[in-house]
Image (cartoon, rainbow, N blue to C red):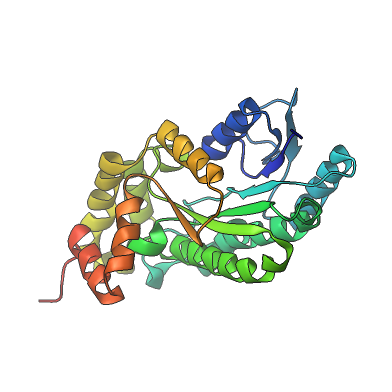
Amino acid sequence: MATKNAFITGCNVGQANLLAKALVQRGWRVFAGVLPGAPTDLKTGGNLTVVDQDVSKTESVRRSAEIVTEALGGEGLDLLMNVAGVANIAVGVLEGVDLTQAERLFHINTFGQLRVIQAFLPLLRKNAPGSRIANYSSGAIIANPVGAGIYNMTKHAIHGMTLTLRHELAPFGIQVTSIVPGGVLTGMSANAHENTRKSWASQPAEIQKIYEPLRPVMCQVLPDMLEKTGSTPEQALEGTLAILDKKTWAPMEYLGKDVKPMGLMRRIFSDRQLEAIMRRTFKIPAHA
């Protein structure tokens, strides 16, 4: 059987890093996109090729696609995993968010995925029908946690892109899904209590005063829930591989023990009912 080819973004550390190693062990040829200059334990060798790529920069993404195209020597890609993203920019209640930082987050999380798709689609079409794109969204698009509004917006936009791509790429037989992970206990979520306290304190003093009723939600309830219900990296990797093993992908594929129940509730309850459940769960105070 011919070796399958994959490109994975954001492989310096975390879930993409583990996934790259796992697919190599499964016999795939993996091109691992890494942010230039950032630490990583990945090295080119065997079926693994490390490729410099900054998803926030169009030229960097274009160049990475050229490198992969040349390395494949006329072959195409079977899988694109759009994993790269950050969560610690433009944090805080929406009224006080710095719009320059908000734009930066969109350039990384949302437009970063679009840049990669535009650059790598020619390689995916070569191996169509049957090639696939998995765009990482987030369980935040169901939970809509306070203080993470801009991040949430970037992830809603990613799923909107996925839904459109499912229509546009259907004639070629290219499957597309949004992987919707819950909390994963990785570097991005490490020190959640300390990070949320810093994020709260970084907001303008007047905003902190106005939104004081939400401080316990953002600084205590949410990080407590992550530590209690978040998946380990190994559990998340197992779930990701199970998604890749599916013959047919749904528009959303849920990943993690905390987000799968929310996916079920999303199908059962109305938007208003689900919102009420989330408010109770996150202990968001009601108007007296």
